[in-house]
Each structure stands twice: as C-alpha cells, then as structure tokens.
Image 1 (tube, one colour):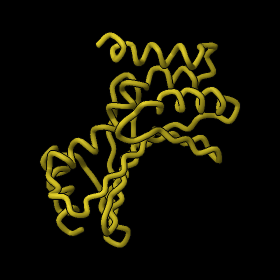
Image 2 (tube, rainbow, N blue to C red):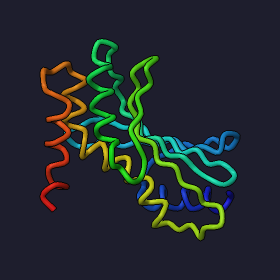
Image 3 (cartoon, rainbow, N blue to C red):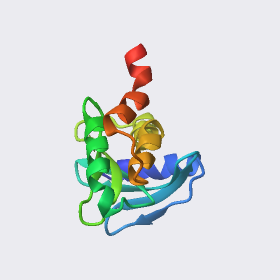
Image 4 (cartoon, rainbow, N blue to C red):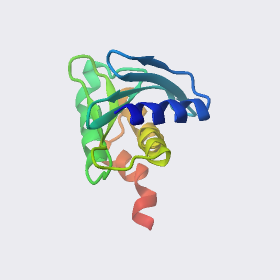
Length: 155
C-alpha cells in the first residue's frame, strides 16, 4: 500500500496538481476544470489491496431530473469496460468510479495516470448529454447517448 501511495504522490506532483492527502483515511483529494463541462473533484481512496477513484461533478442533479439523468447514466454505463457512472438518489451527486485491485500486480505510474484520467475522459465524452439531462432539456437520453457514442459506431 505504501508504494501505491508514493506513486500517487509522485504522479500528482509531476503533473503539478494541487492536492490534499489525508493520512488517516489514506485518501487524496484534488480536482480539475474540464473545458466545456465544469469542475470535477477527484477523490482517491487507497486500501490494503485496491484503490478507488471517484471523479465527482461539482453540481448535483436536481430531484425533478433524476429519472432522465439516471436513464442517461445507465445507457452510458452499458458496455463500459473500465469503471461506471453513479448517481446518489439522496442528493443527486454524479460521479464516475474506477476500481483497481493492485494486489500481486507491479503497479506503475502509467497505471496510476490511466486510472485517474479515465474518469475525466468519461465526463468529456458523456458530459454534454449529461448537462442536457441535468438542465431539464426535452432531449431524449437515448438520442444523447447515440450522439456521445457516435465515434464508437463509426470505427
């Protein structure tokens, strides 16, 4: 676990991101602004054999839009290979979760980088449609997913 913590520190310092580290919880907190989307908080929780990265959108969905946001996120999740979107039905928090088991694995800075960046990449890919759902637009969640995934179908 200590090696993984050190690799996260090295990576975050190398890319010059400001972060906080909570020694008791073994947790890093940082965040970035994604162009044309907004700010995302990044929480990295390190356990004995695994770590979890939550990329959390700064704004919560409003209760009246939960159904559209939820449908959109479920459609986005279908087929994802590394992580998933989640929405908290208590307060509308939307986040992307990546879970990595590092037990018996020679973990590297490259793995750390990819596991942090995947959440950001998913908000970039699905962010426009998510914002539409969160704003109460009349757009259909299925059509918005088709637009977000258009490049996948063309390959």
